[in-house]
Figure 1 (tube, each protein chain N blue to C red):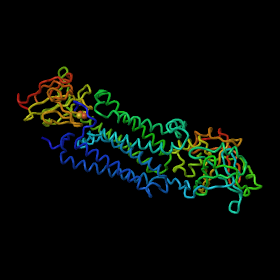
Figure 2 (cartoon, rainbow over the protein chains, first blue to last red; figure 1 turned 90 degrees about the horizontal axis):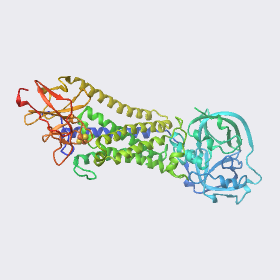
Figure 3 (cartoon, helix red, strand yellow; figure 1 turned 180 degrees about the horizontal axis):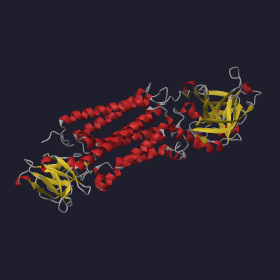
Figure 4 (cartoon, protein in one colour; figure 1 turned 135 degrees about the vertical axis):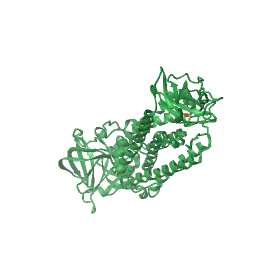
Length: 253
Length: 354
Ligand code: FES
């Protein structure tokens, strides 16, 4: 008779084999622990943006523009000599094109929850009552929105994003694993932005538009969340940069 | 073995197995989710996204282990108990993978006017390599895991017949390939560190390396056997004194089939030969042993009478038998298999000197 232990599932477990298996289980548990730790530790930093629920419902008064995507322009003040721009989205993966178009160019009160990532701000508009004619238009009296300044033709490298997830609605709110989610947001009408990195490492988020200054989501959907290159006219509106591109210039990197 | 079916037949070894499995999954998930500071909110990633990664990576690791068990057991029989209840491992993997899908659909696919299932299929249609909807690959892998989990019970094994069932369950390799591509075209494109590609690489290395090693060890063993074509269909298979009583001895025939030769009886005086392929799930009978007078499969313990190839009543499984005779110090085998369950006389060593 040989000493090789033989295991029959419905009979008892030979002692030597039980010891061996205990070691195997220990090794597997250890492997699991190492893998879990390495994966958690090895993740990129996806930024700490997010909904500012703690600030409650916020209201901002400014001029709304519907194209290429709904944006609220706040007039210049001491801290913001160029004024401020705040991209707008609806609740969930929706846009507010319809109400923005009705109020196009008019002074409005926008209320909703603020999303903030570093210096970037966005508002999730709380339904139809979240975008109404300004109750007190005095703060924007005599101002019709920012001047448009053409900066010329440029070629830029970056990543197309849905602005809402980039501001922290999702973390990661960019990159390949998030592409499907980003596409859903964009199809729903959330403003499409182009994230570029300057030489000094700081980032800039450009609002995308077609050459006529209208929305361009459908033509660029297949290039979202990838490293690409685009060529077009850059334009400044207050502190916002608008990148008007011909979708034909897109190049995957 | 099967006379009637019960949902799952439990015994102490299966309970230990499932306990260890539950411990593995539980510890992995707790460590993964708790490890991120603040339990559900971490400074670098959202809680929902962390859960997606916890379930996804756990399922990938489990699939890797499942695929390593087979070759490990071929290389060292002490790993056979891991194989014994591997189907529970597979079913558990399916549940963990489903939790991964559920985490994704409850977050990345939610909050949209589109139905999440429609969204999954239509919202990314970029089929370039870098933009590929890797989610589709994950769905295909999950569909395979589901099919395997749903047909894991022995009822399906008999309903589909062992060869078809076995072929169906070989899809696990396709499933693994799909998962690797799902990760390569998804997470590996988002995360820039070296840790992630390294771990996927180690998984591939373990799975491929163990399969190649087990294959080459077996091929070498087959080559070492004394297989000389003698008169007609008979071959000189193995030296009698190389047979350990009560232990199987696999022999490769020139036609590629494998035969399990057993020396057994009170004093090890009998020698019989059966097909190496167990009627249950094609387990290797040649690596089995004689228990209570029966050839016992190393995988799940199905038993066969060495002289008839039939399971002891009330069981009804049968395997082909082979005619044997003695030629001096050698066992001769007729390479033409007899129909499953055909009684055939053993070599009786008492008839002459061994
Ligand atoms: S393969 Fe299951 S008992 Fe042989």
